[in-house]
Length: 262
Image (tube, rainbow, N blue to C red; front, side, top):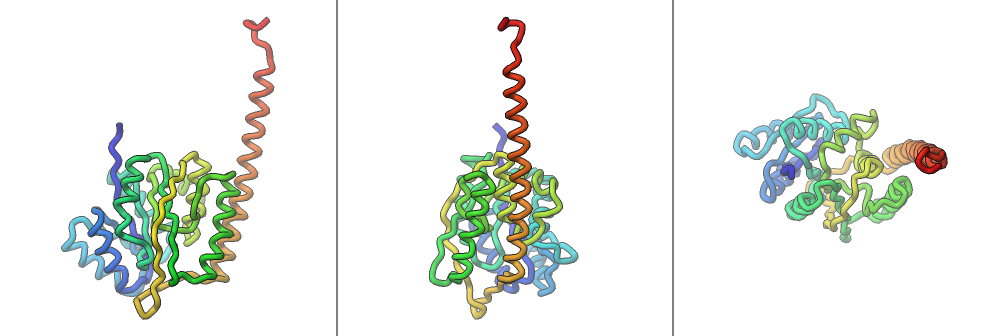
């Protein structure tokens, strides 16, 4: 049996000093940790590179300009695949995700290397009500467009992916490069036959006074999500059509008598 190799991947864009705390916490629970700096202009790239000089388990990859979360993840996983890694745990750089859960998620991935391990968020009082309620719509669409696949939460970015299938689906489309990367990844991997395993994980929303930074914009980003699910809907219809034609062809072929049955 092939041995799986896991790493933690943290894409970051203008997260400020909080990224250093997130990286230190991740390193405390798992090594190696890779950070992809997605064209940040907040001087964190230089600080992370200095951290990497003292921490051999940390690698920092820098993109010259901001390309989007999905593009940053793709850049990281392609490099990880070349380095021989088989799985990646992704987590955000804004302090929302629980680094202490990294070993549990990776252990679940080792048990089910064929699966994507999806974080199922546990919200506390710090979670904005509008965002908690709004994600229910996204989750409904993800389950509908996978014909009932067991996707607990489509938007939560704390999850483990098998790298090979993820690279394959990302290379097959010019989409999946922005912040809407997570739901599209879950849907397209499900279409590819990758099962989902859901594990609970606590979420914390930091106030600006605590260093919290959010690039989410309700109007703009909900329009992008709507466009994404519309595209996926057309993809689902094409899949249903293909499956229907294939089933019809098998039925016609099966109805033709063979020489042995005469």
